Length: 295
Length: 295
Image (cartoon, rainbow over all chains, first blue to last red; front, side, top):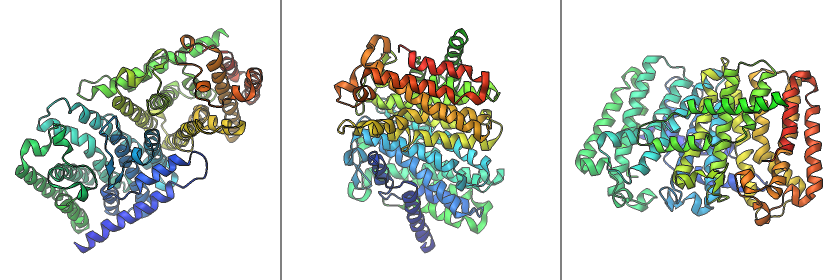
């Protein structure tokens, strides 16, 4: 998987570069909010979502200068959600990607504002001329990102997650929670590539199916790592779900069945890629990576 | 000003109706976030921004079904900013529009998420087909709203406002703070009408000048009311700026000069409207209303 390792390193490097360009350092008194935005977006991370955007857009030979902007915009939305979820009023986490969370490094007010500003900037980036020369493509990106990240997607998923602290969820409910909380933005990352590439319905459905399975496999693996990984490996607190008495795929299925399920989903994900032939290999590798990763 | 009173009442009624339609009541476990979104957006308010959108769009005979959606989207952004600004980590306010603030009525986590979801939904509404049949108009609305409300606009203004708790600002600094914190979204409300109406450059500049002056007059009047009004009249805590040792237009200029300045700005605002002839009368009335209001 040498070319895959290279591709994921490339996605990380390029995402950092575009984020640095889109979030400038400023000298004005409100500089603190820009600093916090840069701190949290440039703190590393696997950059799975940017990778998916770029790899899916590559299937349709989209210009990298377009797909990289969309990749950065989606990473901004992902990062804003982490900043807000880490707040004391929410999950109250001190550590993220091995570093102090935004409100620990700065303060709560700045963290709230940095999250707000990242979400806003993400839409500004998608709507900008440089993202695609056709405005109907840009509006579709805005519309789909808003749907994926709002109250019927990611934000609703976080609300459900808080609700789950006092309600025992079953498998269908957890699946719905995860589809909203993490799945929607992962799915949008793949769909964004198809939107940029003006893909036909057949290919859109294929990528959507892939994204759906990879997203769930990703989440089950996260639950597995939460049980078996260490804080040092993951760069964040572990075993929080168990401590909070929250049902997860692992607590409901057991370790072995959860692992099997993740592998089945990863395998199923690759089956959606047949229509893309060899061009889909990088996405096949990603599906493997998602369930084999150690952090 | 009978027709003006009617117009402002109409803007309030229609904004409520559109918000009710765009933020549904749901039965799923994440219903709480929708409830909080409805609670805060439907808590009344003067609806100055929706009024401006609709009145400015009317200058260009834009269909009301378009301008009312944009009006509702801007009111969502305004409301999200109030919800987040009221949080304990920010201004820590218990009362807003005469009712408990969102985090008091619900809880902090829900308030953060309701704000996030309102901001996201606002972009979804702007990008939707029904907002305008031309996608280039919709992307321009998204782009300009993002610029007005992000780190270089409203969010940056709130960051500055927090910074001002420990720094004494002078008049140019306060003017810049207010242009970002409240002026940018008020200006966008007028510009949105021009964007929807595909106005020529000349008329765009005229509306922009009007918006700029009305926005500042609005803010100075807010500062005056903060000193002279009562919590019962205003539906929120008063004299907070003085208690926090914050410089305001009133503390720097004195009551009389601040009032004069607001009147001069309102008068100056109306001068920008000449190009619109009698069609601009409703906006002239608004400029008067902004500085004569009691709450």
